[in-house]
Amino acid sequence: MSEGFSELGREVVSLCHGMGFACAGISAARATDHREALLAWFRAGKHGSMEWLARHAEARMDPSLVLAGAKSVIMVGDVYARGQGAPVSAQRSTGAAERGRIARYARGDDYHDVVKKRLHSLCDLLRGRFPQAEFRAFVDTAPVLEREHAVRAGLGWIGKHTLVIHPQLGSWMVLGGILTTLDLSPPAEQRVVPDHCGTCTRCIDACPTRAITPYEVDARRCISYLTIERREAIPEEFHAAVGDWLFGCDICQEVCPHNRDRRDDPRGEGPGVRVNPAYTPRHDSFDLLEVLGWTEGDRRAALSGSAMKRAKLDMWKRNALVVAGNALFAGAHGPLVRRLEEIARDERESDLVRETARAVLKRRPDEPPRREP
Image 1 (cartoon, rainbow, N blue to C red):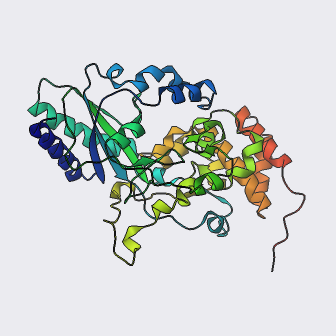
Image 2 (image 1 turned 60 degrees about the vertical axis):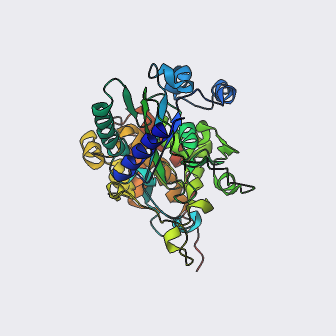
Image 3 (image 1 turned 30 degrees about the horizontal axis):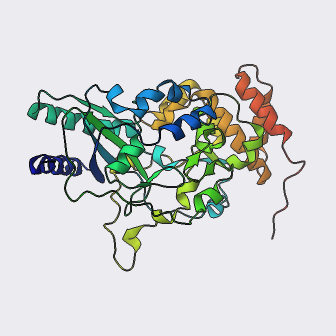
């Protein structure tokens, strides 16, 4: 590695910071170090119905199959939230039982657009300086193992919940990057961050569906997968565990001690967390009755410009019905119950929606639970 290439790497990282990314680094575009573990995960079916993951497995494991001649990966992290938030149990007892919560990453603008716009600008800038080189930006839409490249680029370590944890910024980050044929060396000061999870198992213990084992997630049990990626009915065994999560789930990150907000640290340690204002929440939750009454036009209007538009209308209603069922156990009644009964027999609704309504009503308690005075 020549000093010149290292200086160029430092300049590229500085450009990333100048574009507002909270962290950035550079790694070699080499194949995965975890080939057998990844293939075993696929063989076990732990990717669920996300068949595209397995279909492009070979490309995921070798960047040169995504961009021929790739030599380097520029990785960036964009912070969308800060702090641990209130304990899960407290959030579930706020009295907002007839609303469904949204995962933090999806509450603001669509991160694909927010991140990729700047990465494309960086590609254009670098093409102007290095016209013989090729550049390809990605934000979890290309078959690239972003987390492994992020670790190699010094953006953090992969936690037991499988998310990248930055030592100062925590895990409330979305990742993006650029594959390039340009031979870049990391800045001399860049270091690989060692694993700081230690003996902690808070994310594993807190997961209500037991989807997490150390450094692996069984997507088939993950609430984020069940509410966002799964197109079929949510298995009834997971209905109660879904709680009030309407789209996605943040539990494993909410309990992680590395998400403690350094800006509130009385010792003044750490650089603080720079949250990109593009992720300022539009919605942190939705009224369940509102979602159950949505038309396709309503869905598009409510979710325009948001990553939440990934879920189709019948999936939103399915999720709302499951959360509504849990609200019934928390004492909700009246209009919500009547709406579930209407949907269960409404032939205009899809089979998925009607069948979910029927399954939820079967779980309905005979009478509202008694509350402690």
